[in-house]
Amino acid sequence: MDINLIENILFATVRTGTPLLLVALGAMMSERSGVLNLGQEGMILVGAACAFMAAYGAGSLGLGILAGAAAGMAVSLIFAFIALSLMSNQVATGLALTIFGTGLSAFLGAGYVGQSITGLAPVAIPLLSGIPLLGKAFFAQDALVYLSFVLFALVWGVMRYTRLGLVIRAVGENPEVAHALGYKVLRVRYLAVMFGGAMAGLAGAYLSLAYTPMWSEGIAAGRGWIALALVVFASWRSERILLGAWLFGFASILHLLLQGYGYEISPNLLAMLPYIVTILVLVLMMYRQKNQGLFAPRSLGHPFHPSK
Image 1 (cartoon, rainbow, N blue to C red):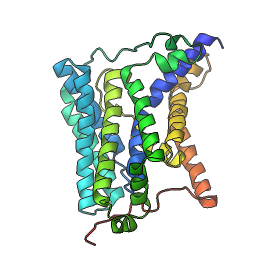
Image 2 (image 1 turned 90 degrees about the vertical axis):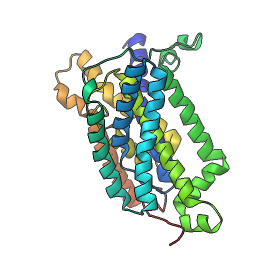
Image 3 (image 1 turned 60 degrees about the vertical axis):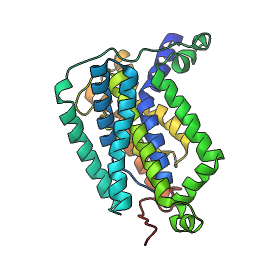
Image 4 (image 1 turned 90 degrees about the horizontal axis):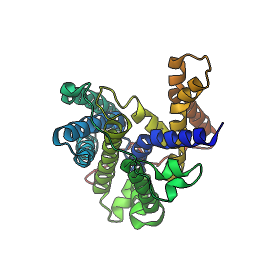
């Protein structure tokens, strides 16, 4: 295997793992605050549709990115109001949000199916992009990939070193105690869910403006579900999410690599690889939960209201 091929594989792995990284970081923040939002797939789709529509109509990719993040955040607010203020079942509400987002994105994007735009172009950073093996993968990507690196560092730093991260974790572990100490539990949870929505919307914008600069129904292709599994796989730790996103990204492009080498394996079977990896991860997590525990936030999925 020559060095150019390895560089291209690493480049594609980071690129393919970027939407998973964005969604999983947002989902982790929400779950760390004790809110289980299964509507990630729907938020990605709405974000992708709105991002493409804005970029196509205004001719501005920057506006499209902002529109995608705003759309994801708006949809997450619907979930937050129903699940947090009305104290509905979070699992059922998240599943309903995915169905709602799938239908809404198909409705909004109906007039744009088959249309394409000039997507985000890679921007090579002088000197750094020339580093052997890693330069192309990490320093010759598009702006949203660089933004994902910044957001990862931000989430990692906040959760590990700041008082805000400590409050989020406290709310997710024991909201009653956090409330007794004077923290606004509902406000923290609302903000965490909205952050998760914005990250899912960004992931959608990446899909429709950079990864495949076009709109098609179901463009998320199950990435929201994979990201949810990735959060569990990573034990709610951002650094593990980063590695897991690249692992799933590699699994997603593995079928292209094998086909390039001429292996006679059904393309449909190879395209199933990331989903097979997801199932294996979940099975592994079930075994781990039985023997060691999952380290999930103790109040994950449990409703809380200060008046109760």
